[in-house]
Length: 185
Image 1 (cartoon, helix red, strand yellow):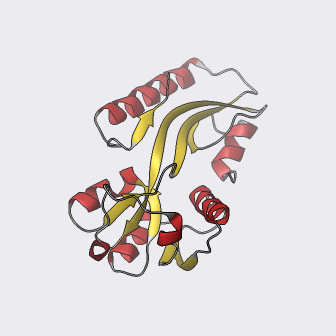
Image 2: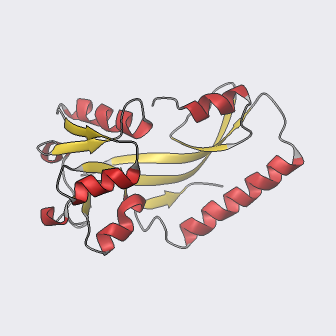
């Protein structure tokens, strides 16, 4: 997984804590896994994708794609999965703006792969259709990261406790739906 600028800033100690995706622990970075979420294929409503009909990546790769630009972590994960599956993706547009990505898909400009939580409301309103990938699918983990190079201060510990509480409350309230799993302790 490609490292992000936030990763580097936490590892250097410039940032006290951050929520990151899929980051592994390093000598300079302590991580706590919180949520494992499913990535779904997202298409225009006319595609009539359904959570009841998972798709193979080879099927999905037959469509043009709208993806985040490299080196964004989600893009790297999707490209790695495509390489592993032996398929090539036809990327017709790149945007790091989630709203633009979803709008282009809704307009029929291409398909994408996103966390189910990111498109839940649009799918419910019929603005997009979505389906999981055939198991094992694609999943990513949201982690809380902190530098190992210094001791957390009392205010930082307070923010961490509040942040953990809020993420857990959002999870328990169903914001991720049934397509995610709480793995925090």
